[in-house]
Structure formats: C-alpha cells, structure tokens
Amino acid sequence: MSPIWHTIIIGTLSYIALIIVLRVSGKRTLSKWNAFDFIVTIALGSTLATSLMSNSVTLGQSVTAFIVIVLLQFVITFFSVRSVGMRKLIKAEPTLLFYRGEYRYDTMHSERVVEAEVRAAIRENGIADVEKVSAVILETDGGFSVIPELGDTNSALKDVEPFRSESNAHQEQTPR
Image (tube, rainbow, N blue to C red; front, side, top):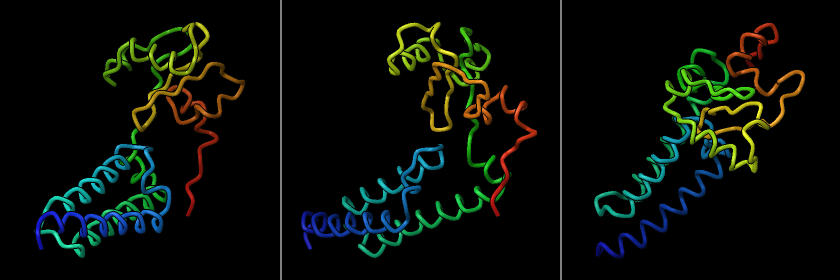
C-alpha cells in the first residue's frame, strides 16, 4: 500500500477508534485538571499522529496504544481518588498568588508567575480594578481563578493555603 493510502485508511480508522475509546472511557480522559491529565491528552494526540505518519505502525498497534494510555489513566485516577498518597503524587496543589490587595511575591516567585500575569487573569475576568479582587489562585492545571468577593466561609478555597489549615477539622473524606 502506498504511503498516502496508508495515511488515509489507517489514519481515518485510527481516528474513529480514538473517538470510540474516548467515548467509552468517559469525560475524565480528556479533562485538564492537572499535569498528568495534560500528558494523557498529549500522548493520545502523539499516538494518533504516529499512526497517521508512519507506515510501520499498524491499525492494531494504534488502537492498542490508545487503549493502553486510557487504561493507565483510568488506573492512576482510580487509585488517586482512593489514596491520599497517590493523589498527592499525581496532583499539584492550588496556590494563592494574590489575596485582598496584596501580591504574594514569595509564592509567585516559586511558581514562576509575575504580576503582569496575575493582572492579565484579572482582566480576562472582566475586572478593571485590582482592588475589586479578593483572591487570585494558580490552579492545578496552570490556569488562574479570580475570586472577586470572598464569602463568610470561603468554602471553595479549603484546599488552598492558608485556608487549608483552617479547614483541617472539616477535611474531605476519601471515598472507598
């Protein structure tokens, strides 16, 4: 088979197989909650690209690779939901970068974030005045969350330092 026909046939079938594998595996497979999820997404794309461009990769190898990647992702997330140690290994913690009018420069430095990026996140949320922002958080996926107004409980911040220590008494239970 010519390389062009191989790309058309195997690429199309690999693409269809990938769609089926992703539909069966569920929404979490392509989530962007952390670096691990990002790696899974990149690995799936890379595998599809390899099946499109390489004459030496068969359809069976491509489909097997898709399934292996998705199964490994399922196993890791299965155990991370059930094990605090696995969750800490896989997932980064959200980081408070700005709080009630003050940049947290030590934290920003360790996370390699500059003031301009924090201000950009604030603007992206339609806020023109930094003074109208209560908190900016660097999330586990690398995105920024901007909290315009903190409530009385700050319940959405319970996994972010310094709020984490305040909520240890009400720590989340691990499902079994």
